[in-house]
Amino acid sequence: MRRRVAVVGGGIAGLVAAWDLVRGGCAVTLLEAGPRPGGAIGTHRLGGVEVDAGAESFATRSAAVPRLIGELGLQDSVIAPHPSGAWLQLPDLAAPLPATGILGIPADPLAADVVRIIGAEAAARAAADREMPVDAWRGREDITVGELVLDRMGPAVLEKLVTPIVSGVHSARPEQLDAGNAAPGLVEAMLREGSLAGAVASVKAQAPAGAAVNSLHGGLSTLIRALDEALRAQGAEIRLGERVTDLPALLSAHDHVVLAVDAPAALRLLEPVAPQASAQHDTGQHDTGQHDDGTPGEPAASRAGRGVALVSLLLDAPELDARPRGTGMLVAPGVDGVGAKAMTHVSSKWPWVAEALGPGRHLVRLSYGRVTDVPGTGALGLESTDELLLAAARADVAALFELPRLREQVLEADVVRWEKALPQASAGHARRIRGLREELADSAVSVVGSWFAGTGLARVVPDARRAAAEILAT
Ligand SMILES: Cc1cc2nc3c(=O)[nH]c(=O)nc-3n(C[C@H](O)[C@H](O)[C@H](O)COP(=O)(O)OP(=O)(O)OC[C@H]3O[C@@H](n4cnc5c(N)ncnc54)[C@H](O)[C@@H]3O)c2cc1C
Image (cartoon, rainbow, N blue to C red; front, side, top):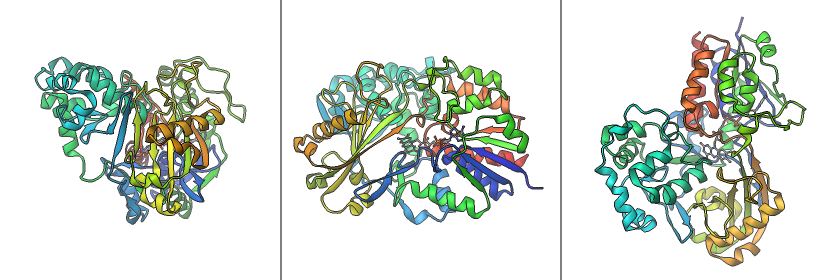
């Protein structure tokens, strides 16, 4: 008899695991709580064009996503972003992001594009990293990006380069972000190379040539559609609108269960199966939040500081054809009059979008919600009303492009909220994950997904495939 495997969660992790399992001969049922597969990869329509509403690209440092794309026959649809690159908005300056860096940490602190942002004195302090011994970092676990950068390169690199990138791209605070998780291999390279700058250069040198991220013509959701079709063609059963609440019950009807859900959902489901490890993760009180179907909400602690509200604006603005801010901007905290933490100039970054929208039309996407925001202080984010977000987005787009008229040139707008799809890997995360993996090692439950593997497709896809291979090997 074929092994019966239930996959809970139809984001990219669940879909990829299901795809390998069904091809490995399992009878796969995928249960997704929402009305569509894809999770954090979804679409919305502006100007008559369907564009990505969540994740829009994949990191090219891993071959895992391109390999998957190839297996699905989509290799000819792979596209690189426009090479103009992103900019940084600081309180007193807007400038292109330095060309060579990881998480904003420069490979050469004395490079002109770095000095322009942090100043000559701070650059000299950062360059002292090359002379300082690294031995104090040997054997250390749970190193945060913030402490590492502050010690090696000083406060200006941390505040002006690393914080805007880490908060804008990773929705995290450098002081809380696990260095091993956010930049795999960086600490090891520092110990080997003798400096943080040397480590950045060495890790960058190992990355494949070309853009750091790519996408697909038609958007990243093309990948979800292809996986969905391929799974159905292989005979997998995909059940939408099915929120799983009882893991033991599911286990009694299947030989194996793959949990591919967000962290709070996974920990709640795991409670009866792996009480020890799941308790270590669950540090908060349960709040009064409930899902629509009445199942309990998630721990309060895990609700805080996560999630973003994205405001997309379709503009009639031929003056943006020249890409005055490259492919978009990361905004440092403390920029007067700007509430957004990042702005993607979507139609600049992805030329197929510009082509589909037509001449003079532009699409920008602004993100709101910093991890440093204190609830109740009026900072814009996930909880803000559409009205407030839309007003802020109009003002911000005008301020960031330094084109006041833009606020009047909005043709269409849309607000999308992502509550759970950006888990933060705080220090100690890797250790807790190892504990949970050990506790589940001989069980009929596997856990995949971004809270387990790290944020982003380049992490999630290979991890889901590894889990599927392990199941098939037993
Ligand atoms: C706005 C945004 C932009 C991003 N941009 C990028 C990017 O450009 N590049 C990149 O690589 N990464 C990006 N990411 C991160 C990336 O999208 C995620 O790391 C990845 O998609 C997570 O996939 P997942 O399958 O682990 O989780 P999810 O996509 O969150 O999927 C989990 C699924 O589980 C379902 N579920 C939850 N509970 C249950 C239950 N009890 N029963 C059944 N189903 C359940 C949910 O409905 C959901 O569909 C972005 C994320 C966001 C939010």
